[in-house]
Structures are given as C-alpha cells and as structure tokens.
Image (cartoon, rainbow, N blue to C red; front, top):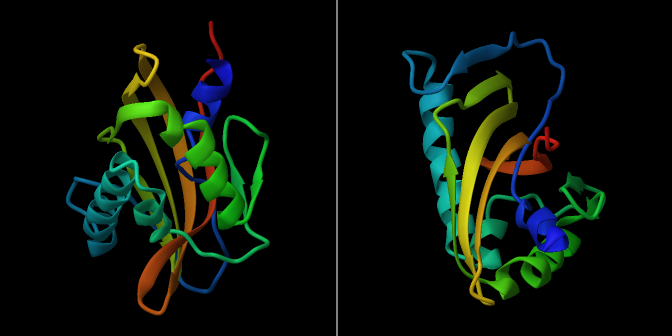
Length: 164
C-alpha cells in the first residue's frame, strides 16, 4: 500500500527560470494578472486529465524531452515523460477503479516570460480495485515552459507531509 500511495502522487511542481522580465506573482482567484486566470483554467484541465485515469490525456500537459526530471514520492525520480507515464500507469492507474485529484484554492503563479512556476496543494480521493479507499493531501509544484503557444510541464515535484 505504501508504494501505491507514493506512486499515486505522480502529478505536480517547483521553481523556474531567470530573465529580464519581472516576475508576476499572485494568488489565483483573486483580482490579478491574466496569467493567474489562465493558469487557474490550465491547472483545472491538468487535474481533469489525471482524473480521467488516462495517462495519454495527462501527457498532453508534459514536455517529452528525455532529460527532464519529475520527482514523485516514490521512486525518487523519473527520467523523462516515458518513464513517468509507465510508472504512474503500473503503480497507480492499474490499481485504481476511480480517483479524484482536487486542487485547493491556494494556487500561486510566478511567471517570467515563457517560464512559469506554480504551487498548489490538492486532495486525492480514490477507490482501489482491491476494495479499499484512499484519502490523501499533497503538495504540487511545477515548472512550465511555453512552447509553440502551449504551456508544458518541464519539471514537477509532488510531496506529502511526513506523519506527525
């Protein structure tokens, strides 16, 4: 069950890049730059894709460069989207009958030109094929790069708080 729980968190985000453009940072949902409204919609579509339990739908949000690193709870890291996709499918999707990742209302977006980083917490609620249930709160940080007019995740970091 611990491995499943760790792989389950294969969705999320951290810091970004430099550039001469000043960063725009604000909390999504509040009156702020268009970036926040756009990213609020983007994040919801991202979570909807993962909630479909279809790895191909989720893959639309990721850059496919082989050298990219995605951090999950376990294993320590995935090298490239192909490894991430296969690991999530085997460890999570193949074991779940349903899953719902619900982003909280704490999305923060920082953008510098064509690079943005987002942070958000989320709740996972799922049903296992073995009959059990899963409830989990987690943190998600991602670095996004705009390529060809589309924002893609180039690095992701998902974590859960340690037990008290």
